[in-house]
Length: 119
Length: 151
Image 1 (tube, each protein chain N blue to C red):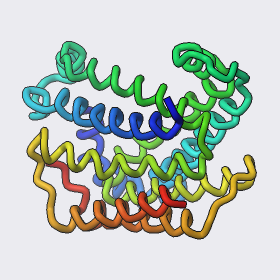
Image 2: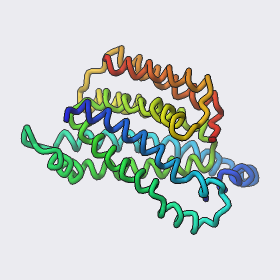
Image 3: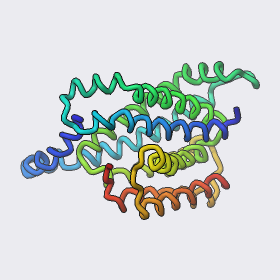
Image 4: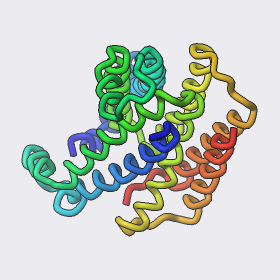
């Protein structure tokens, strides 16, 4: 696996991790009415939490593979592509409303990522 | 859930404490924010430094590479420092709106890029700097425009 492939895989899996985390703390856990102790217990029994932790671990491993072969001044700013991906995935999977102003901000971040990728 | 309660109560506590002990506690969140940004940057730079020091055969298997990376002392220390930065970030988030705090985290791109140049002699072109500035602008827009609302 090339370092660049590892970098993009880390961004994609890291973004899916955030969606899994949001799914874990949504639903019955989202109301904020449960007592703190049972809130954590319910969270620990959620499959989404374990999916989040697995994805997070995989993304960290891939990040190390990427960073071992790329300059940090290139690889680290490229991680900002995850802002864009998380917003798109949240729109698709969590049906979150994304305002026009936020789409414009996402477009600006995309432009920045493209500039860094080409540098 | 605990952090949600804290963030709702924090302004009231801060306003009463602020009149008596303004000098000591007024900027706790900002201090936590700055230190968290610096720790995250130091953590990633230390990880990079540790990875540079790992010697592997040219065609080492993926599992072997990962094992070597996760066991390298500087990589482990870097991940731990990054983790400490995350804890301070949570402290900052519990005291201030995330929409106010979040854009500052993109300062990491500048600190890490300067670190890459100075510590590892990486060449950084004007185009890359332009990309970093544009990304920071976008991050600022995303959080300022929405007021950081959570849905």
